[in-house]
Length: 375
Image (tube, rainbow, N blue to C red):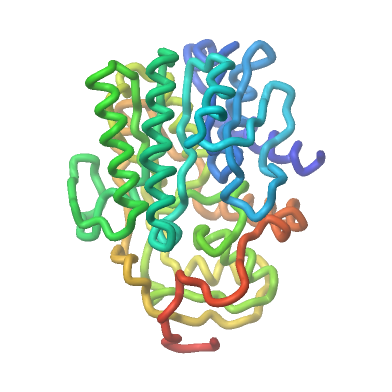
């Protein structure tokens, strides 16, 4: 319970730092809120924040099939009195009926078939989850007349292969290289359809490279949790590319801030906008930070960039989010990275058990030969 309390304290301290307006606090007080994918990296932090915001008279329903971890124990779901966990799937009517029986007035849709390589390996299932599952959720939300439907889209995914930086919301491209990217774009389109045709109050939030407490490592997971996990095990860190590639790594609680404000702000309805840190971090620098923080002496090595990874740099514009919802990233990368390392230390046994690295060759690096260093 001590580790759980540290996560609660981390989120509550962040909320104090953000100092949400009284109107936002009043809006959430006593509400029932549904979070799909609430046991995941972003969702597990969002539900702690919502638990605090809705208070004792409110309720946070978590609907998650635990597909993000190699475990059937929802260790990421903090056991707070007003959080109700439903182990279920957005494709299943019985699970959706169970969740909507609680009459949520706000839906945060974070559940997804994550991520790019996973969607390539299992393209049919990715479409079933990310498209058919979302349509079902939109249907239930429309019938239930929810007040807000907030969709977790992906700026990393939908902007295509050849955008100008910083990435702005009016950029459109059909150069999408994975089913995950196609599905995220499709998800926004379906949200827009339900908004225009049925009047469902939707908001599309485009996330960039989330990191922080809550994300277990795995074959299909993000670079930061995998780097930390491998380094803590004394293994060499593989960089796919030259190491000069950059990403706009965004601290998970800054994303939570964006979601909370997006659901409240009336002028955000029907809109799409980036939620990011607005700062580039080089992958080689990241690897060196991880090795230093974990005292890992194993050398970095390089592999060919994966075929679908066509973006050497990522940097988002957050001007629209600032204007629409008063979004502001509060946590710089160094501070957020430190909390990420501490989470790994606090939850190490659960993380090892939940990490999903199946035996044998990983399809994510199949055919990639070593450029230099160790194998």
